[in-house]
Length: 184
Image (tube, rainbow, N blue to C red; front, side, top):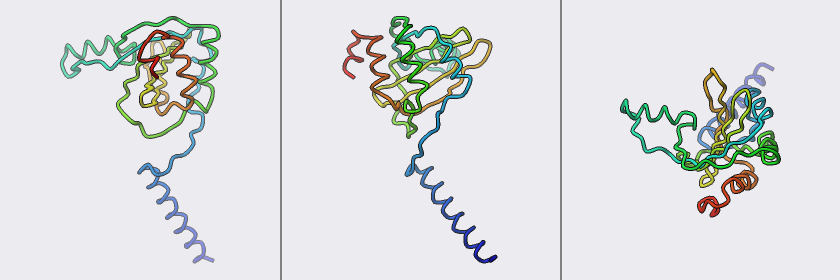
């Protein structure tokens, strides 16, 4: 009986090592449970409007004191430079975005493809803070960043957009005349 238990233990250990190695090498991907934490969900559900921004990566040397100060100015926009402020949305637009963020199908973990050069931020505003949905439709990546007053912002989720067409529809609605967005 002891020999059987030892053999079973060794087999289980080998299987665990193989699965772990494949996972960390990237050969196996696992479905992700609903990824947003309770604080982010509360902010999403209590949001009353959505601010929309076109953004790009800043070309700032943040290794100098001057560059550091410039980067701090960009902190409210998750360190991206705002190139255009879109409309403030509410009503059906807000409900559609809230619904997307409550759906597990909107999130898909995968290896990131590039340095996130998002293009858009959809900001759900709540009396308790705000949640930024930073999206790059070129590489299909998305970041969900939570911000609360008198607290630190944090990234709640980073990965692939699971429901690209629904998110893209909302972005195109916010920026209907933007040539880059139209081309997506």
